[in-house]
Length: 407
Image 1 (cartoon, rainbow, N blue to C red):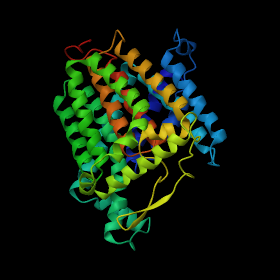
Image 2 (image 1 turned 180 degrees about the vertical axis):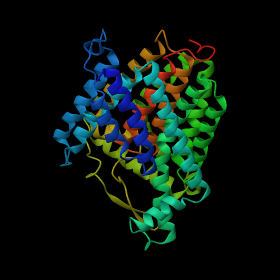
Image 3 (image 1 turned 135 degrees about the vertical axis):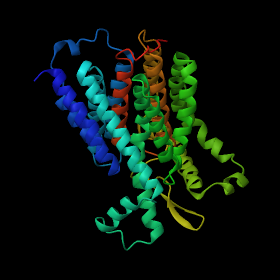
Image 4 (image 1 turned 45 degrees about the vertical axis):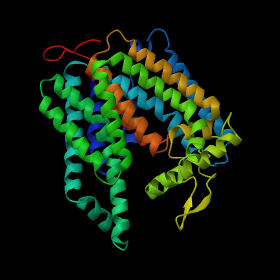
């Protein structure tokens, strides 16, 4: 079987399966993408001769090596995250690059699978938003045995599941909309973005709302200044990675009590998590506590009459998470990778305006999710980003009806 045929089949399968896994909460997307990367594994020698190795690839590789080494001094005793991260990320990247190189008929078939994923997941989440999550709730009551829980607790689980399901839709909606626009279907693209907006503002998942709004602003600005915004966004994320963990605890300490009292309890809890993580970072800033150390470093405190965890699984902020577990060394390596990657993408001669918008959208959505809520090692996020990155490759692959403007 030819390489392109294998890659095309793998790409279609990954996007089709991601619809099913997205409906189920998205957690199985990562293994699906990793397996399909192996199915599509390129055997043609030309694929493995890219010329000069990019600095971003070197820095990223060193960061993964440092992650693996950091487990040596971690108090956590399960090495599973080493394999999920250090083998998973290269496979996700391989999937995006290999499938993204497809052209001709196979590209169109994979693009159709992308449209299927976005339309199917968007319509499902729209129905769940209109019907208060009735399908998800029915499944959890009938299959997962949650019927004995109070209604409020049931809805917490339902909204968490649907909030996770919305992540692939958020990441892929704008790239899919741009593909539709390129093919002469702006109305379809507008529907995709509208469905993503409904999902972002539903299900009591504030981080999805924040991600959608921030990414929308950044994407609109990128339309007018594509290369400049690419450089700014990548540089800002790299700067946040270095500065935020050092400055955030002091900023939190100086928040007026009146403002803190006006915040939702979930955000006050988040501030306590960040403050505690900042304290731990200052105790061991250079090498961090090691991979997955956040789990055994947990503690408890009283907040508004409740006993809460001060570090529930992770700091719920990517910059703090990186510093806490890999220290300044890991933060500098990752920041270097981001700066080099941003410069390489912004300086690419064949970069199209649509690609620039797609890259900025994906980066801002993803960073918003992991800075304000999720853990940085969430492999289902990484696998979904690979799906979205694949669609961005397609945005520069061929001329639209009219012409894709180069920038």
